Image 1 (cartoon, rainbow over the protein chains, first blue to last red):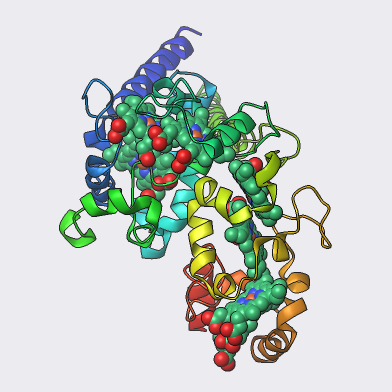
Image 2: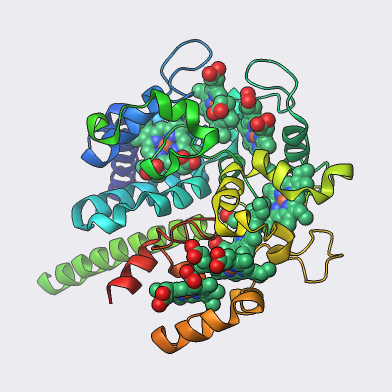
Length: 183
Length: 155
């Protein structure tokens, strides 16, 4: 029995350490696939938070608080990343499809940690009529929507080539170096 | 004594494998069910008073990429409007409202000859969105840039 407990404790320790060590921006960007994401993030509206601190990958991509959801998402995305990195061909790194997966796994609470008041813009002005209607729908006051933040707000941190021609992304695209220089 | 050891080792391996399977399985199950964001039973469209008829203007803010794709497409240029394919969200239109209209029904109403021609060439393919990467952007979405369409066109 004692061995089982010791083994369990060691396993938990190792897992906790692994979760910690694999949650830094530098770790995410240590695979060549993620370098471009870091570059894009640097030029996005989400480069810095309100206190001018750099925003880390995990602040959006993992839930804020530790729980079953955190473990599940972290493990699923982590295992997928390692498998694709090791065995995947180029098509598996097809960003249009990755975006869809990524959006599904963004926890809305992560966004709301920084964006509390959904009736104000980031410049503290009242939000547009369309924004108000959409957010009320999100909050269940006017219709209801199946979409999370990331399913309405695309390209908040990354901008692949094929999304650069959109008018909504013009400011972001203008700041970015071309894909080749960025890599 | 040795026999017992062997059996115990096997038991350990079995236990670890079983635990791994249970752990992996539950995580897969969890990510497939709990996370895929269903907040309400059925998505209802916004109630918006006067603007209700103007799909494009509101969608330029709410789904800007889809709106721009449509605007620049042949359908946008020819004013094949949103509700021609989607119906009206309140269900009062002449066709049923659908976020994911059945191409075989909806597109055939205008493109029957082209669809029939393509059927002869490629066999029956209901998902129009899978192809058409050569005349890029004639329907919104990433209809012409999916991995699926590349596979099909290479054949």
